[in-house]
Image 1 (cartoon, helix red, strand yellow):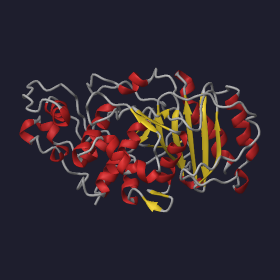
Image 2: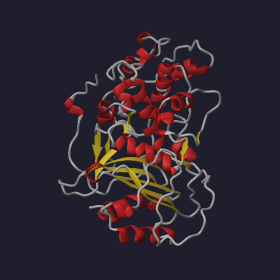
Image 3: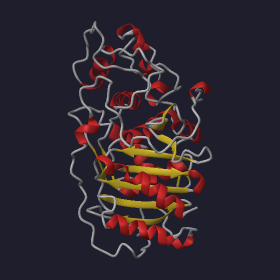
Length: 388
């Protein structure tokens, strides 16, 4: 059973001044995946030209998404089509795709500026959110016994005596909530690592040569927590991340067309920013989270885990609220403003979930600087109001 102290659950709604990308990484890791993938050219091929001011019902591809016309919803269709026309005209620079589901049905789908229905798009840090879902599978199936267990308990080749005392205190929950406090390579005494290669060597080098004085309290956004989480999933499953994903999450959501960047012969793929998915598969992920772990009538992740995953364990006006590698914030300063759960990635990749409106929206983009914030504005000014 998940047992998390109530003292770490934070409440309160946040303003719109938070950043849409993370602050500089300070965890000591030498490789920042978010930055490394930031210049990756979009893989999408050019979409056929069409009149974006005219509504077209999404195509039924038999890929697990239920399709419905927007006329079947209470939506202000004119507002949605105005949004589509502006996106096509470059009002928000390079928005590649916008998808909207209401009541669990895909009612709007359009692609712009090179976006395409059939090709995966880089997710950037939404990769972290997917990894959190894979950890949920491992927890629900009993591979992870308790989220309050020490992390090193799941790496049997490492004992508490092998690591700095601060590292021994890190729990699975600390890693999931980005509060492991791990600082890679900062331990003065660096024990010799017995394993020469493979997962055991990678885990040993990361944990045995690190310190974590802020374990359980210091929030740090970056790749070091998702890296530990990816290692944990690989260790308990005995599979690479892609093997485990294909046997669990991807299988249940019908995700087949993807690319997950891999570094060398490691079982741990680039968990910070290395996954590419189709916009439609991003929508499936959002619908599953919105429906408390269910998709197409099947309970994929337990409701208990999804509730914990979308909780808030760190909050600041600058960044918003953060759960298990998913965000949860209010869009306005008004205390009555509902929360919006989201997966976020650099250059404008977003999954927005507004439970009170039964609404899920997906955006992919290829924007930099101020342009990467555009999906926040589009969702708040066009999508959500159209369905209210």
